Image (cartoon, rainbow, N blue to C red; front, side, top):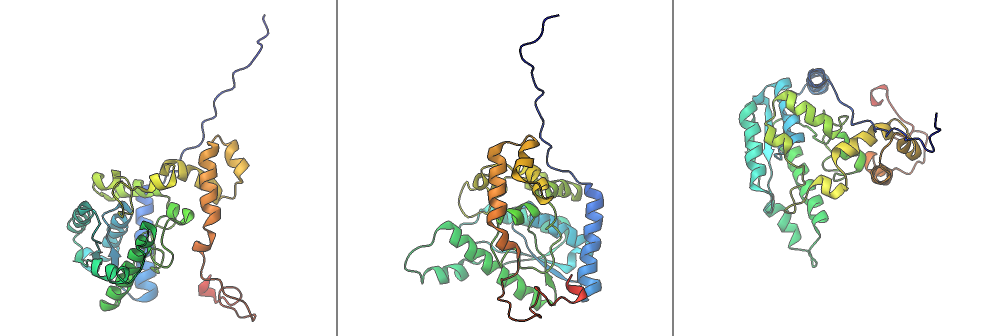
Length: 286
């Protein structure tokens, strides 16, 4: 019997992004919202910035289940360069779940500041300004109805630092923060979010043609698959051993490593043994 001079190794199939049981997750997140808002804080009204994207749509749908559509105030906050479809997609969610809705155009608010600048800012700065203006509105509107703002950031964005510090991450309650983007898509379909909203390319809606995945250089499916193992403490080499492309692993690794500061409270210089969050933690704090 001839001895083969080489052996063909089987191609390793890297594990895909992890899936969830969307029905179970939806039920648990509704209970989470009721527990955190109503039981712990005595609040039954919430405010959500409705962008027309899938994340805010899912947060709105969960909130409608938890509190009833009439207790959810959805606020559309377009800027002058926002896509008109963002408004119509947000309105579709308002109609579907019977939410209260207001539209507050932030153009005058943002441009009132921009016109004072000697040099026009780049799109990243404009995006950060818009995000912080919207957050100020959400907190003020929450105060007006004695409610709470609900966050809409997903786990992929949080790991990648793909949000504006003290803006997108500022709301005190976030039902989506431990769900990867691909898992949010699964949950959206379970909740009945219109498919054209689920399927449209995620975008910050600041520049025509801009998309999240274009900014990343990889797809959400690629990112989430690797992020799952990074979150479990796998090293770069261990991720590569699972069969992921080095380029994908390096993009994920660089993003996570370079944005750790955005996932923490402000760094405080410790002078005493009662420094808040470093030493001083009441039982409720942890």
